[in-house]
Length: 93
Image 1 (cartoon, helix red, strand yellow):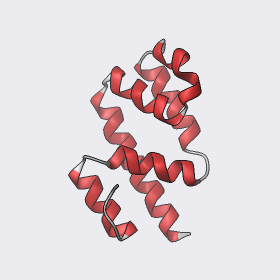
Image 2 (cartoon, rainbow, N blue to C red):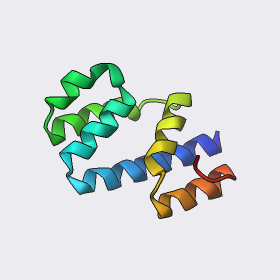
Image 3 (spheres, helix red, strand yellow):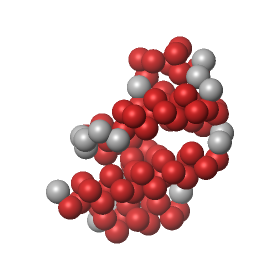
Image 4 (cartoon, rainbow, N blue to C red):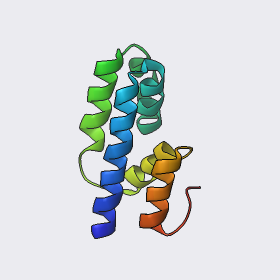
């Protein structure tokens, strides 16, 4: 749907911002949020490996899991929260 496409675009914008930080600890955190069962593997990854892993999984499709991940990723970032509100009709929880 149009809404899902726009939320996915927002997710990619937030991921792009995350990538630009080059912060390995933050990247590992978000990889673990996406795939908690891989915690041990993720902790051994460098920034690029973690990024490649996360992006490869998140770019495919759209599901409730993507929705919740996007909501978590934009939370606390005023610009992205505003875009979320415009598309979603309510504030980030």
